[in-house]
Length: 112
Image (cartoon, rainbow, N blue to C red):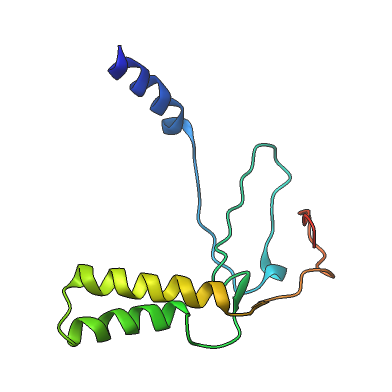
């Protein structure tokens, strides 16, 4: 019975379609006027980024490799850099990548 329920829960996913569209600016976004459309945006370095390089995605991967080169295992280095990354992200000021208040498009911003 459990297997049947799991299969029935996953079944609707097979009927979904998706496409990934990469753009360089919100001005390039063209959202079709259809119902049941979900738009997903990456937050980090897409909607907002830190005001400094410390704590960026690039810093994260550089620091991870640096810790491995200092003798830590991959898992040890990942745990340490994740701890540092979360602390930096929490304490660092961020800024919006692109001001959308004057954006003229066919999507609605919540709490701009």
